[in-house]
Length: 201
Ligand code: TYD
Image 1: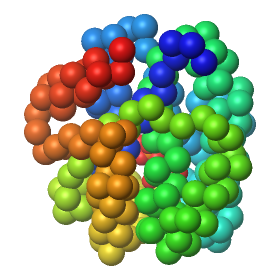
Image 2: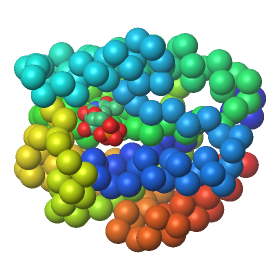
Image 3: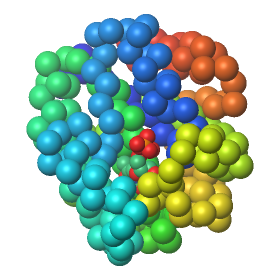
């Protein structure tokens, strides 16, 4: 995959991942920015399914649905782009499942890593930008933004487990993880992320 790079943006709901993704694209228009779940037709349908507050979704089914959406996105979109040498930014990737389903839903990080290894083959993030905020700050931002989707409605203990899991993932892979303070001004978060991207060249 000559020249291509895969950059993941991670963090809890309300951290400011999407603002960061937009800022990166403004600064570097040659990037391809995709969101998870979504980014391919099949994956967008799965996104609608997992977000629907009127559905009861078993935790294992939820983990498999995210993995299925990811498998489609990787094979249909990400692998061809990387082969073309493009730099792909994913607004969420495997570590979202490790944190949300593995820790948040209590399925176990290793079990969820195993299904994601099956889903993604050898495609891994070269760099993970982790936008970190406390669960309290994130909850206030999400509440201010309006109605909650099925996962956003999971409650404070759930999000505390998710943040702990992200922190542990960052600590275990310091060569891949860049931790950005999501309570900083958006321009600061973007410029720190751009500095981290330079190290990939
Ligand atoms: P998110 O990027 O936050 O979308 P939006 O900006 O529309 O809220 O992702 C949607 C939700 O899906 C979010 O609550 C996190 C959750 N999610 C998981 O639980 N596991 C995953 O693997 C992924 C990709 C997302």
